[in-house]
Length: 275
Ligand code: KIV
Image 1 (cartoon, rainbow, N blue to C red):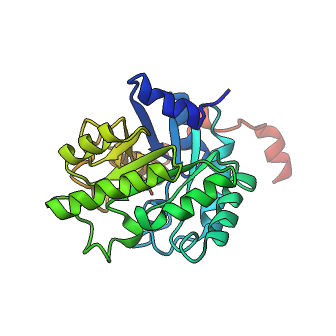
Image 2 (image 1 turned 180 degrees about the vertical axis):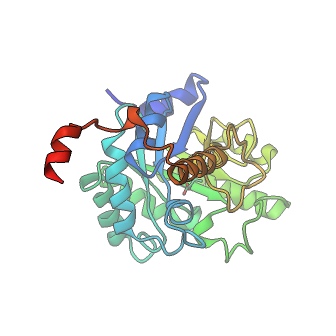
């Protein structure tokens, strides 16, 4: 039996930390799942990390569903959350419910995530009423980063901290089972975590959140275009991969690859007769 949104809520009550990581393909999903991660998020960070866009804005529902299906095939235990891309839930509540439903019916997700605070509360409530668990996301919301003045820490002054708190409460009251806090000062994240009955999952939001999420490509050092300051890189796979590829090129050029161990030995006599 895989992890459910009810389990995630229960983790908060029993002070068990929640781990969430992103995956965009089958192989990575298998590794993240086997390691024991609680939640796998097919984030719309897909757009930047895998598809090479400059932001998450261009990502489409079809692109998300394609990758969610692959991740779903590699996920056995974790709760699988699909990120709703920009403009798939803002136009109308009806469209939001229909698109959220596609993540569940067509892509094997257990829940969806969407960005926004108070202004998204009614939409979250409609999706939840349709029977689809929703994870909220406030603070730095990359889909609307331009409107927020860029990729900046949110809630640094009293007014914006108050707004964050109200947004968090609105998302929780609308029926979300968890909420991502992105780029929020740790003291404000602590306050929100204490006030809400649903778990907070932080990214650049300090140690007091109920859980932590990172983009896996950042954690393992596979995305080298930039690395946010809150990311801890546990390894640097891009160096290892580039090194392995360089060795392959050298060995092909020198004739060291493929050697006998990596070839199928044929019958030399038969080859002579054929020539
Ligand atoms: O798209 C994403 O990967 C996210 C996480 C960073 C929370 O939204």
